Image (tube, rainbow, N blue to C red; front, side, top):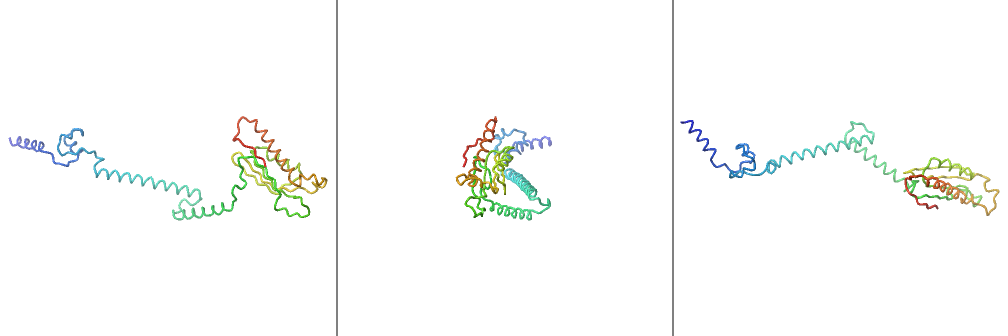
Length: 245
């Protein structure tokens, strides 16, 4: 009978009112009821674990650790890439690496400051310019003997050989040549000089070589031949508007 009374007392304690403010998941594990049926117990909270202040704090702490880990991995990746670009020792410390990077950026800024804007870069339009060179110090005649010629057009394999043949046909020799290519376009900047005796057999009214007109016309014909040859191609890299100077 005593055992029965003890058993009955335990049952009475289980049937007693539930203490307030007990966690919902604790009540669910104790009575084996689903979360949706906890509203029958007075004082039991129906909030989810994520809404509990302690659970929210734990979740925020875990998110912070993961974000910090990703940030450190991203910084490490950037530093490794910087070591590769600067060709530094893989074991170099972070402070020395950043100092080398700053020094390299300063050197590049000084280098780019000495480069003129759009220097020798090809443009989208065909262009031919022939001017007397300012380096021509000849005072024996009013006719210049040195010219600066700039030709900008589409790049092709036979452009340079044809340009050389054009200058040879005019009996002009090349003193300096600068060639730049970009995106299927090419710009050739030439410093050329006419050979001696080219204009000796010409009258004063026939001075196209000395004035640069013949050179300009020959270069224009070279570009025109190129345009005629490339117009038959099924595909072109870009459309070019002719604006010959």
